[in-house]
Image 1 (cartoon, rainbow, N blue to C red):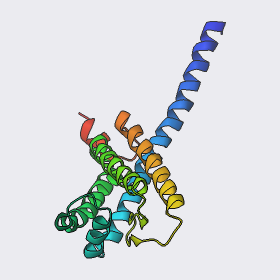
Image 2 (image 1 turned 60 degrees about the vertical axis):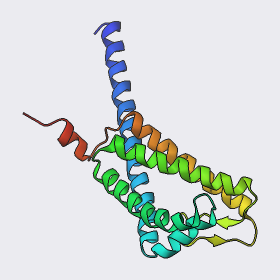
Image 3 (image 1 turned 90 degrees about the horizontal axis):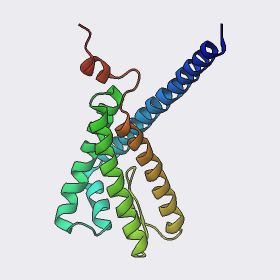
Length: 173
């Protein structure tokens, strides 16, 4: 075996290892987004009235629209979670999740900038806080940005293992 054959073999082995870890990272990103969205949506579906009240606390949408927004978002979250969990329409579901995460981060940043002190209501509940909101807002924003990174990874390369996309997009003849 000459040096060029060894270089090609080594390069192929490095690519295979890198590809394995990249594939594992995309799978983890897909399942993480699915789990977080499913949990957030299901908790809020349990009390849609409270979800609407939480949206109203942000004072971003008119009060009469807050109930509609609060009642709709949990179902969107669960629908995106189901698509991501199944690995179906992964790029579109990740793009939908990214839109939600950007909106959530902007809403949190908005209340922080306005000096408001509320619980984000991201996982149900929500309401006025007594203090320490700045630390909570920073953690909420960090979480949303991390999840946004996961969504961006899937938008860029949506192919993952154990996904229905592979069967739908690459049917065997």
